[in-house]
Length: 344
Image (cartoon, rainbow, N blue to C red; front, side, top):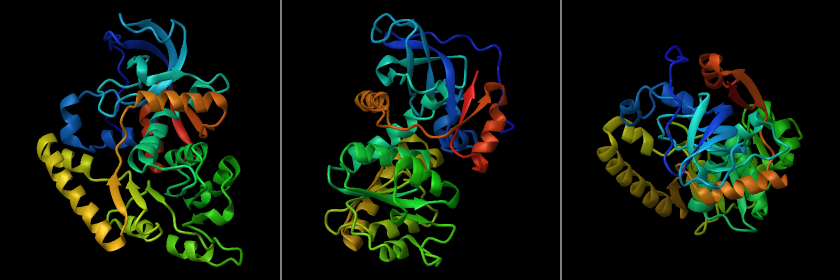
């Protein structure tokens, strides 16, 4: 966090024809921001230094590019920036392609709106682009208590998922049950007693057996681990022959960061192909990595769900932009419930 600096001499961004200038009212500090600052995917991000971090934004449109006409001056909007955009939203102003913005829900604060887009798009791509989740299917989320996990559960239900279950921490269990309506027998709390008789369920597999979970159609891994044990566990809870395992912790960014874009991407392709074969042969399920990408149509639908009250924003804690380094420390510590949001 010591490398985070608040600069006072940064010029206002120039606009491309399809961009709008947003006066930032709020911008979240995501786990990706903290990882990039700490050196994640160094070969990818180092040439962009100095970086302005911040992938989420909520604010007011104050200027438009020559071809930008979707939002009038003064419109209140929210949206997500590309993971590799060097000039992010931790600033007073940010340039954003207008197709990647949506009207801010009137019932949400700017801080609430800034906590949603990047995480929601991450969940959307994993569920609907990569896993092809369909109405009536069953979804298992490893990391249900995270921002992405909570939004994934809500989006899945909005699309008609028959059941949602997953793993949570004891600090988030009550919040998940209350805000998302997930039943107790659909949650495995990995760090405390789970069962009604007070026994400790030591694994997700044990929880599935104890609660008599039926096989799932899609499993989403938002936790990951260095040994990839979570992937194997999730695969065994999927429907054989039809189950789809999607992880947000693939090796693409790591390999690109280690070997550079060309060599890293080639190595990632080989590794992903190997894993696909491995999971099909050993567990008879499909396997893929999911990487967030901007998606104008998905952002439009997320905005509609938000305005309709289908999506509930996560809890937020606001901090001043000048305290960005402290926000990074708090994000890394993981002790703050909900999402940390910076306000200029």
